Length: 308
Ligand code: GLN
Image (cartoon, rainbow, N blue to C red; front, side):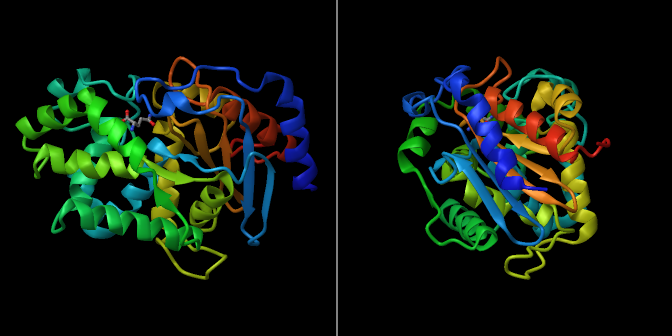
């Protein structure tokens, strides 16, 4: 299979549609991003990376960071995490607060904002916020084997200034004692993890452990056990696109995690890690052309976990 020809074909077919969708503007700094960008990168379990389009341009990974923070939190407290966050799709928007009251401050899953804020609270334990942010950045550099990866401080500040709904979620859960640290500390870390800037090429390398039974084939390091890798993929499949997760499974059929920066990380277990980026979003807040590019890729490679 000629992966390079496949992704070049996808990028050129989507060429006339560049700019479709709506760039996230509730974070003012993200509203400034040029919408006409489209990139794809694939890293295979053999350690090869293929790129096409704007695959080397850095973008804000936003909620894709939740996958990596979950990996860190599982490493710290293991399965105990599930006493504080559920594993069911929410069927609600990524920043929804409605289910939290009935469920006593326990978010439905680690990928909606409420759940991710609890995960960040777990990673923060025993650290100052600055140290937790440093741990996350080092982890991402280690996974992608690239020390140039950094946080975009402008985006972090922009989120800090406008993240009112996230403060509401944090305070609400702190009221239920499911947030253990001061809310501004937890959100300080959360906004910085979301503001990490990475290219598709870097992101596809960082995610490859999830396609390769928990081990990074580029460095040989074991990141998580095969069981943990499988379980993170299951959560990405069921919850990674919020109330668009069913639709993403239907059209693409791969575990995936989206971010409002327009990126999506998708995992083809046993085969490859794929990162796509196009800033225009659909109504749910997932990359419009990104999802379409992944659907084309899944069709052309036969990589859907549900069959060719
Ligand atoms: N930082 C964003 C927020 O908290 C992340 C949301 C997302 O990417 N879906 O609103």
